[in-house]
Structure formats: C-alpha cells, structure tokens
Length: 189
Ligand code: GAR
Image 1 (cartoon, rainbow, N blue to C red):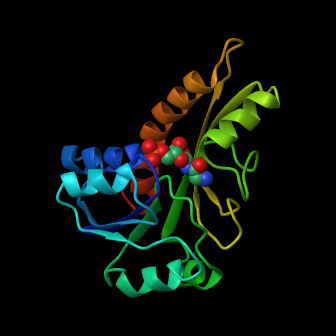
Image 2 (cartoon, rainbow, N blue to C red):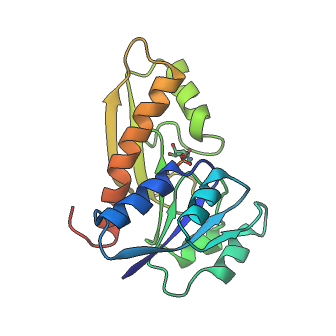
C-alpha cells in the first residue's frame, strides 16, 4: 500500500476526487493516511466525513516544522490539493520528488506568490489569454517552479466567465490529478 498525505486549505474537491479514485480502484493500492489543513475549511470536513485521520496546523511560520513532526513515517507522497501555505526549503528538500501540487494554470504562466484559485482565473481573463489549463508539478522551495508532471490545456471561449472557467478547470483537475498521482507512485498511466 502506498501512503498518501493530502494538504488542503479550501473546499477540497480535489481531495474528494482522490478519495473517490482510491475507492474505485482508479488509484490502486493506495490509502490516505492523513489529511492536514492549515485553516478551518470544508476540505477538513470532507476528510472527517470519510473517517480519514485529520490534523489542523494553523498557517504561519512554524507550519512546515510542525507538519514534519506529525507526518507518518511511511509517507510515499504528499499531495497539495488546493493548499495555500508555502512549505519551507528544509521541508521541500527533505521530501524531494515526494511532494506534488495541482495548479490551475499552464505553468510557468500565472504562477508564483499570490497566484492561487480565483486570482489566477481573473488574471487569465484580464490578460486575454486564448487558452489556459491545469498543471501538476513537483514541489520545490521555488514556488510553482518544480518539474511538470502533467499539464492539460483548453481553449478559452469568447464568452468565458470566471465561473465557467473555474468549472472547466475543476473538470480537468479531476482528470489529471489521479493520473499524476499514479505516475509518481509508479503505477502505469
Ligand atoms: C484548485 O483549483 C487548485 O488547483 C487551486 O485551488 C483550487 C482548490 O480547489 N490551487 C491553487 O491555486 C494553488 N496555487 P479544491 O479545494 O476544491 O480542491
């Protein structure tokens, strides 16, 4: 069994997707050993509703060291699924190749500090982009700059709204996140 730790800050629909894929066998031989939130959020509730072990560590300068202390020893993969705190260099360096993040843009476009969730969709529309998409990448201490594992794009329609864009992004996230997890865990796509 591969042990996955999921970090969340928001609604947790990507966490839900991972839960569903493990249940359905689309992510085989894996379990979620811990869900960590850096704030009160619905993602934490989802985890509790599924009887998953949860932990709240308030966001702030000690988050990474606190997380390191409670991380199960046999953790194979840490998934940032809508997680908004920045993990420090020491933490990232000790888990090189074991932390992945889902990001709602075609990195390196619209990445970096302050680029998360709705802010990204607003920036993408304001920039008049013709396409956008989703990236799953390894996490390093350089925000949103780690090696790309999977990326999928789509065309932005002329009448695109923030809401329609967010919905399309989620659909693609639900498609590529499980694939990326399987790839990183060594399960063939
Ligand atoms: C997702 O769209 C994810 O890509 C984004 O936050 C959303 C969380 O949704 N992540 C970032 O912006 C990270 N920079 P969820 O809580 O429903 O999974």
